Length: 410
Image 1 (cartoon, one colour):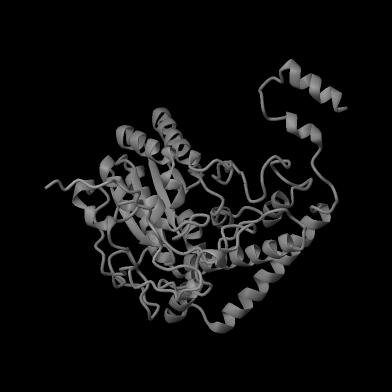
Image 2 (cartoon, helix red, strand yellow):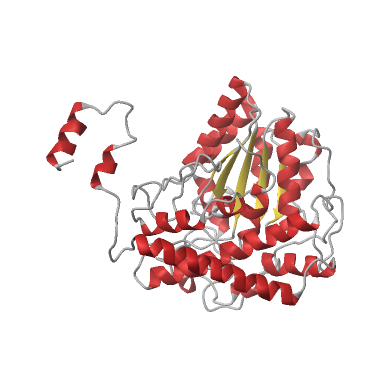
């Protein structure tokens, strides 16, 4: 008797939907300090297990434990805490501004602040990030001016990209932040190509590519891994797994793979899986991968496990596809509260100092917003000149664009 049956389409579905009780019992979380730390020159085949666990440093008592701990001093940790607090305060201000109609669109980083803020601290001047729209912490930690960030969001006359990008699509070569593209996953290939060029020129700089869990389903992701594994340029390939794409859960993009990090194995690349809400773990993994790149040992793929607490953007209502309380139930906690607890446990911080820092940061962000809004908002004020759309496109402006600019009166 034949075992053949008619094929059917297998569509992955989330275990929990809107209206259900949040449940993360399926997420296996090792104890802090439990995951081994291989030598940076360890071969990919010798560390396959690290793609299926989660590197963690901070335990529930706020202590830094295990082989990935001990790399950061107290001053650096306090600066990292302020970076995350600054990003969260900035987010809240810009979200409110969007709801007030002062800007058209915004995307929060709520719950993911540790990833970009800690990663940036492992980079050097001259390194280049190829980010998505949820890594503004790279700019905050690099000291990029808040007023410039806000002017870009408001698309006013102070906007460094002169109104030619969507809000939150920042760009700063000086701060190692490549221009964001709204076409998903293109930056992954660009990061590998930039790193290849750096290797050809003999420059001691590395590139970092960033992608979300949903965008790993794009062909650019796989193309980047092919070139990375073949030419072994100095690049770190980051996947921010925040559990949700725009409205589909991570299983749609992950397919049959056990983890996103495990996809590196098919390309012979070393891979780490990291607690993205643990500032110390993020920095330690970034530093480890950066050392590999700087020693000409090739690329590393890192999956940061985190949770997108807010909506995908201001155009999104996450309550339509996931439980409203799911963010509070996320077992890896809040990155700011976890680092705060660690500093208090070390005697390097206190609730009083934290409250004072919150007030100082709120004042600083409010002052920056007032300065940016004085230039202009969506309602009015000074805006970039239409002439600017013709600039920075060609080294020498072709006749047809010159003619069009003249027709507009510029």
